[in-house]
Length: 276
Image (cartoon, rainbow, N blue to C red; front, side, top):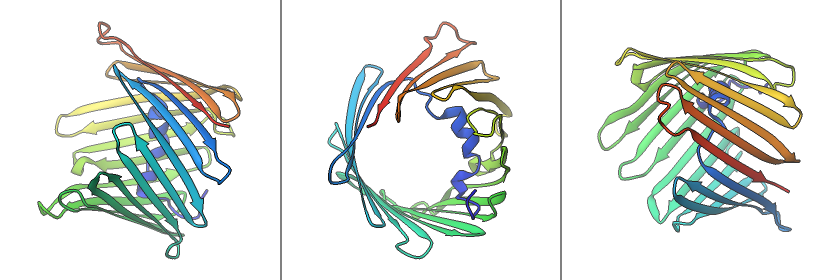
């Protein structure tokens, strides 16, 4: 475990990742390579519905600075600069999406043994400021976040959460959507290497009196193969098979079906990530 309580975005993240990460309904091919100058290159081809897109990304690390540049087929250039310890115990992230100069964003993260603080300034047409903070320890952490739009003079969000983490389990409670929803999640690891786990997520939205209960899990078939499954009380059932073809190269097949609307076409996704 780390020394501090982690960022606010880490609250409930483990359970959320198990239920959503790597699930997709598209066809995706990613090829990564490394140049002799130390630049990591990644090419991605994506087919979503009847539309095909792609991008080429490069990443270069120089001392405490990480430079990321991504060029998309729509002539959009995403640039991100990450500075570690530009100031003591901080991480500074500056990003912009060209040619939209108003998309600039600056994020500063501060880490302490008993607290973390994140502040984000987004330009757009009117500056939006987001602030989040957590206090506690790696075992027990309490956090809150808020967003403010300077043009409208109103809060875009305010949420709060608490997490409890042990070596073999983690639990969280998040009050979100400006107090309109509450989410409770619990994840339990079934083995010491944390390859197999079970999770339950319960979300209640007060304005609609609607409850969503999602149960999922992952299971390591062998050191190279993992399967995942999830289902909720709305009748949606999903599954995922992930296999390491060779070191660092992974094949992922996923799908989802709505048991309450079997006339709808099931979702199917295929992703291949190739790395040297």
